[in-house]
Length: 172
Image (tube, rainbow, N blue to C red):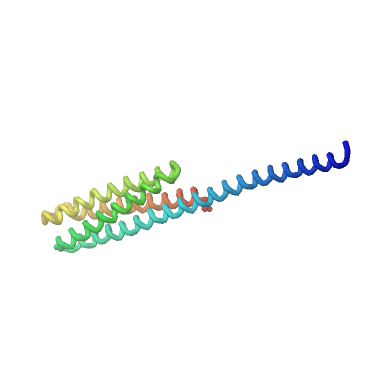
């Protein structure tokens, strides 16, 4: 084989090797960028969900505070309930994005939050109904039940945070 053909074959092999390495590096970089984009999108969705939960919880606290008075201002109670309903809808919308984007562990955590939220909302509805009926016979019992369910909700939200950190690779 003469030197020209050998040089040509060497150049061709070198070119194919370089091209192969470029393709592999390009695919690896694309996967890395996609994973980074997905992580950022999930992080934003999780943060929006937690923000909506926070706003809803502040609205919930306003209802409970309005109901604490010996003789609650029913117009104020109704106003805080309407605000709470709006914030609860915001939570639902934010949860839908997280459910679509998240793995099963996140969906399970959201389900636990929804269950705890529902339990607390049920008690709050009874408290509001009692206030409108001017019936205080179950007031102390309902307040105690609301407190227990509030703690259950807090634990469910804390569990969501742990799951979200794990999915995002931030688990310590």
